[in-house]
Length: 422
Image 1: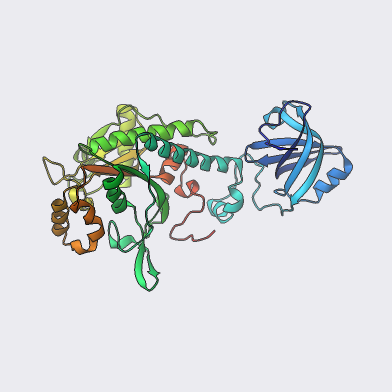
Image 2: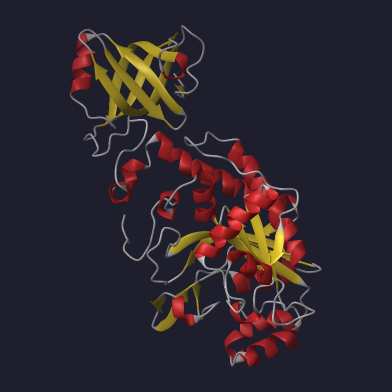
């Protein structure tokens, strides 16, 4: 007998086989109701046979079972169906877990939830969180592939830092020093010289001692880089298309309770960094936006444009990496941007330098030795088109879409300043 899924028990009267976990048991005087959970959802079984009821009394919730029974309609049961005249075979005995997975919501503290992640992720509402992440990844990849982009995978063990050496994890690489990659930035730029358009999904590592609700030491970065652009506005336009593709996939899955999928505007509202400082009430010499500035700007974008998104362009050159293209009419600023989503920085992107000599001059201006960038600079010596790109933080995107108050809730096994297990 082939296996059926709980969400599709077939026509009434069919005898079927399901397999899954014992999600919940309710023992009454003459009947026991057992809800089975598999990857598709829940299905109630009705047990009246005394021997089978005794068998079920001897196993814990989350035991893995095979159930054979007859499909029947019952409007009161989950999904409107149930199985009757059932037989149980135990595939794996389990101790009842410390978290009540049958409750509609997980009524435990964040540390308990994270400590028992192997079990807490089984809760149907928690599973939905990662289904949103998986849908987002699917939308990201599919949208870029349709645009002619090639997916790449770049090294996560590197010889030097991409942004700065202060926030890298060091490791012993067969007797020589190495680092965990902060981003695939140099590699994805290099591969523009091969494929013109590339994208990557992978982990990045930041050795920053932040203990906040918005930072992780390891997170998933959704990177894209494209060639033959005019300026950073072409990058922003592609980003808008990618977000729309991610949004479309997310809207198609079963969302957690209370989630509101954002609308992606036809054109993302954009303001200059200097204007952003003014709107946020920040000093005009501020080099970056603080979290409170981002929140104010998010509220302003909502009031002014009805938009969950706001792009801030023209960040100060002093705050951006050496490879960032300057604003042509005023080199104090750059052709770069941050995208705010519901008052939180979600994306950093922009146009890059593409002339070899410009890269050398930029390194020299910052007192850096080009010898440390030989592999990266080789691509520019041999011809690179005008190009740019962006990086989306997956966990930030998911947490903002779902209204989660801590980014740790949006990653399977978070790594932060305190947590290395599970």
